[in-house]
Length: 269
Image 1 (cartoon, rainbow, N blue to C red):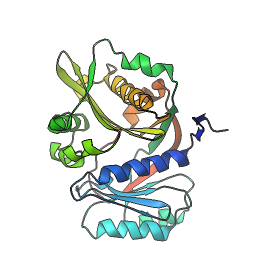
Image 2: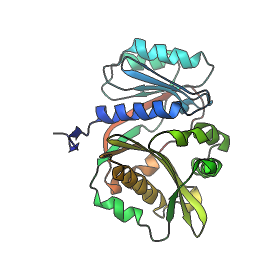
Image 3: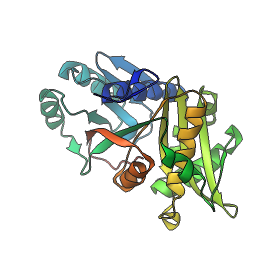
Image 4: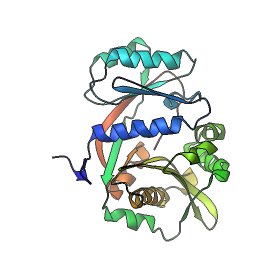
């Protein structure tokens, strides 16, 4: 039987719906951003010319090729690179669709991970002996963008557009900064909405990795979400972060394949 938290089933279906909801909330904060749901698929258009930041999520495995194609056509009409995240169990016709469009699959699939409130490892990780963690206010949005860009090795302008000051108006949104002796070393975002807290864009510049900073700031974001009433934390992991999140108590619910139009796209946490 699937595990539960506060009566809510911790399943890939439930977490994917939470992700789609958070995506819609973030899209409203982006200048020129938009969100659309059609059948069992959802579309984010950020307007940023990065494939992963414009694309479709298969929210339920019953999604149809027709609905996905309609949404992909919308972003293609904007002249933007785009992506499609396919959950396991979706119909094979989606693979025909991506091949017909000349899309390419990312070398590494994306795990969808979650944990229920109560993991003892979170408090231990968050209490890092050297790291100081605080939330950022909207006036510090450029600082967040700078550290995130350094961690993901992407242009800072991308993060300035994707996480603008308007994001701070989203209910339950928090941006975190971790410092050591006053030097910024890691960042993360948290988004609490009802029973769920989503954790996004955990970024630690390469020179600061391997010291537990990413684990600590992820744990802090999850704990704050639980303190605000959430019962389940979720995230999409990179290869680099997988073992870190597993040690915190996150488990992989399922692994998605990611297809993109030929272009460079950022990794994601």
